[in-house]
Length: 428
Image (tube, helix red, strand yellow):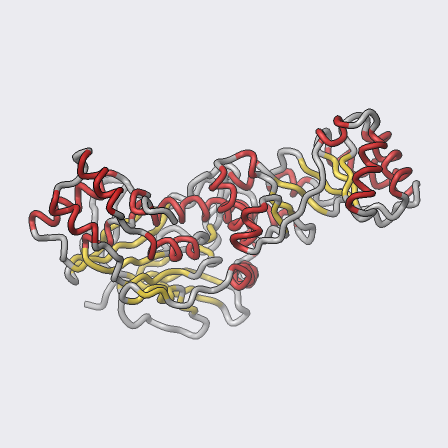
């Protein structure tokens, strides 16, 4: 990252720091927690994503001389704060839910512990990464579930900020998407990439068949031909005429997709192309995928819905101070109250493996029962990054966790969270 990584924060973080340095509270030992008070409307669960990106960014979260000079000259910080920031390195502890874990209202998905000064600076960075990536992953998990065993291609890069597109591709892959069209996500995170041609390729040529022929010659007969630039039935006939019955796939990007899928399958079969797959794209969301469940479709391309969180572009996480020098602190304001004190969490399961509740209680020895699974794991100790699971390992973790949710918790319809959250009070 560049030398201005420390600027990935809000102005008020630095004004609080400056005041804390002045009144002597900067060094007080504090615990901050990241959690969501509620799930987005209509959601039964959320998916934690972005943890790996956040942890890799923290060592680079610092302030070089040029950045500090700009902050000082613009009056954002004073000389004492400038000197403190010059040596800033996060030296505290971070514990949290594994990336790819399911979260629910109140889940303490990340706990940041250190001095007030060093921990408060991470608020905006932590929330911007986790809120974006978790929103995308939560939507992607719903989309992948609605798609069933049909693979989904993430293709929403042109519907969001260029850097958000890379993060979104990573989060979608974590949540079960098979591939992405985004090449930067392939290079940075190893996400498999896929893509063939757009309508402009067909329009470039005098005749649709010329475009198909050139594509097949360049990419092989296993390629996917986009057949809805003009007339779909004619496009399918031309595609098989050019490529033969061994054509890999056809893609349709517009129209009544359910009807077109059936018509396309019948036409392909009649032309002898029984193994040619059908790929659908075009403003698909999880409800559209569910409606296509009985259509003869082999894969989906999903864009806008996944990169925008399918109507919930932020996960709703907040970063709240819950403990100061071992003393629990809490907001009491109406509608935004918090529970004080550092917490731990376990997920409770039946003997069959089905999750029944999430138990959140004050830090200490949990009231463990058979079937309980601890949800928090150490990630940073004294500023040192511990082992972080690979993206593929996190993807597999989510796959397994989703199999433990009760069936109604995976429904697309509105309803209560997949499992309830229970708060245990400290012993008296």
